[in-house]
Length: 245
Image: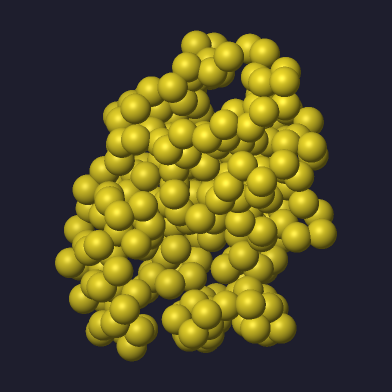
């Protein structure tokens, strides 16, 4: 089975459409999403409609959670808070209801899906370092966990010796996974990469060949930027797309 795994769309319809087109060309069997469909970008309703219409299984991200939680705004920086308020005032009740019902974690046969971490106490904690990964490895019940949140593609691996190692997910790199290891794999961001590379990101996981491929793609950043400016969102949210941070 070939899975296309996307995350952190962040209301960027231009990037989402290119990602889905690429996944079709690469003949994946199933597409799943790891949260933050909304937030930051100018097309939240359109992005949610695509996820719904294609029946793409998704988990809830922190910006998704913030859409229906006024209290959670206190955890956002100024730009994120402004964007989620803008989003809340523009999406339909159907979209709000769909987002509200998204689960935090989904276990499939070969892997677990989550957004930030496998901590029920703090599901939106960042996994940046080996130390951050310990709790999620402890809670991982499948060989692999796929996540997003930091927008930085990479692979944490743990062997039988319990030592955690990390490698950055380089563009277009294919990594073979070992049967006797467990993995936490960040798929990067479709709509707002933050690794200094202004290209959208997703991965393809082949459960038979047991490998993951990090895919990067170009999309029309200028168009997204102009929408952000034209719709009254903070200009910085468009400017950062050109720099990939």
